[in-house]
Length: 146
Length: 61
Image 1 (cartoon, rainbow over the protein chains, first blue to last red):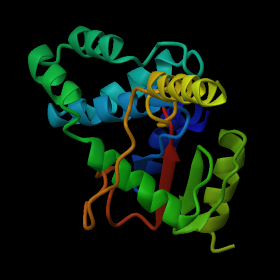
Image 2: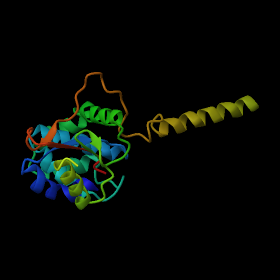
Image 3: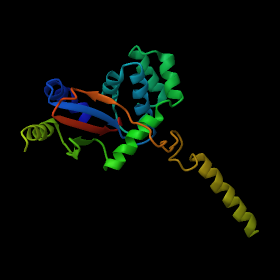
Image 4: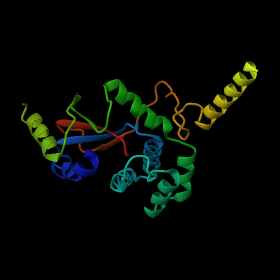
């Protein structure tokens, strides 16, 4: 999975150096837990902790539909991160951010996304990208105007 | 007799559909339509002046 394995290097070498602007979008399509996780991330974002929660979920990944991202688990992770547990639970239980997540998916589908991760570089699909080195080559080529 | 069997089959099928969440993929998260004009998430790292924009669509699973 791209985001989990490559992001730290990408952020350090390209985002922090002003070469790349990185945008994360949801494209949940692998089952209910995909939606729960995405909406929970938005709830964490409401408390200013989107990226921390995003990183945590990718680090916790164990497979599809194995229970890692069920609502009770997601609430536990939020509590362990020091988020306001009550506010987080209310946000998740009421599905406050479901339309934000679904709007991402709608936009992705309209742009031609059919699987994840799908990467767009300046509006053009560059995935599949197998590893960071391959991504780095594509970024360097783009920076060089190739 | 055959109408009775048909009725039993119909009831069984209705119960099966209900148990499966009305056909929404096994229950759980109901699928809904996004209201027109709804804006997606806004999670961005880096400078707006950066020459490259990398957009990733991802599923946490």
